[in-house]
Amino acid sequence: LTILKINGLNVNLLSLARKIPVLWSLRSHIVTAYVIDIIKCIFILIYFGVHYLRLNCHSRKLLCRHKYNDINSRLLVY
Image (cartoon, rainbow, N blue to C red):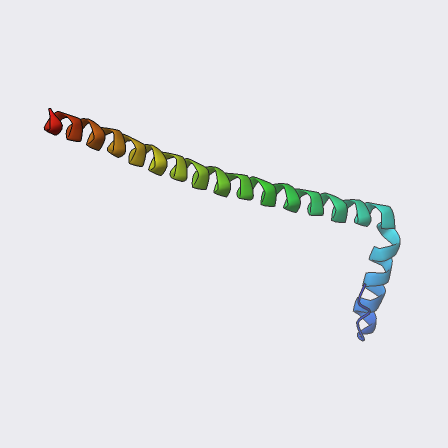
Protein backbone atom coordinates (compact mmCIF):
# COMPACT_ATOMS: atom_id res chain seq x y z
CA LEU A 1 0.00 0.00 0.00
CA THR A 2 1.17 3.52 -0.73
CA ILE A 3 1.59 5.33 2.57
CA LEU A 4 0.18 8.81 2.23
CA LYS A 5 1.65 11.76 4.14
CA ILE A 6 -1.71 12.83 5.60
CA ASN A 7 -2.05 11.22 9.05
CA GLY A 8 -5.80 10.46 8.90
CA LEU A 9 -5.58 8.67 5.58
CA ASN A 10 -2.44 6.88 6.71
CA VAL A 11 -4.26 5.46 9.73
CA ASN A 12 -7.26 4.46 7.60
CA LEU A 13 -5.04 2.63 5.11
CA LEU A 14 -3.24 0.79 7.92
CA SER A 15 -6.50 -0.28 9.58
CA LEU A 16 -7.85 -1.46 6.21
CA ALA A 17 -4.65 -3.39 5.58
CA ARG A 18 -4.99 -5.09 8.99
CA LYS A 19 -8.65 -5.96 8.36
CA ILE A 20 -8.14 -7.46 4.90
CA PRO A 21 -5.98 -10.61 4.89
CA VAL A 22 -3.07 -10.71 2.47
CA LEU A 23 -4.22 -14.02 1.03
CA TRP A 24 -7.62 -12.61 0.10
CA SER A 25 -6.07 -9.68 -1.77
CA LEU A 26 -3.70 -12.07 -3.55
CA ARG A 27 -6.61 -14.33 -4.43
CA SER A 28 -8.56 -11.45 -5.92
CA HIS A 29 -5.50 -10.42 -7.93
CA ILE A 30 -5.12 -13.97 -9.25
CA VAL A 31 -8.82 -14.16 -10.09
CA THR A 32 -8.77 -10.84 -11.95
CA ALA A 33 -5.67 -11.98 -13.86
CA TYR A 34 -7.40 -15.22 -14.84
CA VAL A 35 -10.56 -13.38 -15.87
CA ILE A 36 -8.55 -10.93 -18.00
CA ASP A 37 -6.68 -13.85 -19.61
CA ILE A 38 -9.92 -15.68 -20.34
CA ILE A 39 -11.47 -12.54 -21.87
CA LYS A 40 -8.35 -12.03 -24.00
CA CYS A 41 -8.51 -15.65 -25.18
CA ILE A 42 -12.19 -15.31 -26.05
CA PHE A 43 -11.54 -12.13 -28.02
CA ILE A 44 -8.62 -13.73 -29.86
CA LEU A 45 -10.72 -16.80 -30.68
CA ILE A 46 -13.59 -14.64 -31.94
CA TYR A 47 -11.20 -12.52 -34.01
CA PHE A 48 -9.49 -15.52 -35.56
CA GLY A 49 -12.82 -17.32 -36.05
CA VAL A 50 -14.26 -14.38 -37.96
CA HIS A 51 -11.04 -14.00 -39.93
CA TYR A 52 -11.01 -17.73 -40.76
CA LEU A 53 -14.68 -17.70 -41.81
CA ARG A 54 -14.06 -14.67 -44.00
CA LEU A 55 -11.08 -16.35 -45.65
CA ASN A 56 -13.08 -19.54 -46.10
CA CYS A 57 -16.00 -17.70 -47.69
CA HIS A 58 -13.63 -15.75 -49.91
CA SER A 59 -11.84 -18.91 -51.09
CA ARG A 60 -15.21 -20.62 -51.68
CA LYS A 61 -16.38 -17.69 -53.75
CA LEU A 62 -13.20 -17.85 -55.77
CA LEU A 63 -13.62 -21.60 -56.24
CA CYS A 64 -17.25 -21.17 -57.30
CA ARG A 65 -16.27 -18.43 -59.73
CA HIS A 66 -13.49 -20.62 -61.04
CA LYS A 67 -15.90 -23.56 -61.54
CA TYR A 68 -18.51 -21.28 -63.08
CA ASN A 69 -15.96 -19.79 -65.47
CA ASP A 70 -14.74 -23.28 -66.29
CA ILE A 71 -18.30 -24.41 -67.13
CA ASN A 72 -18.84 -21.27 -69.21
CA SER A 73 -15.63 -21.78 -71.15
CA ARG A 74 -16.56 -25.43 -71.81
CA LEU A 75 -19.99 -24.36 -73.01
CA LEU A 76 -18.37 -21.76 -75.25
CA VAL A 77 -15.99 -24.37 -76.61
CA TYR A 78 -18.91 -26.68 -77.38
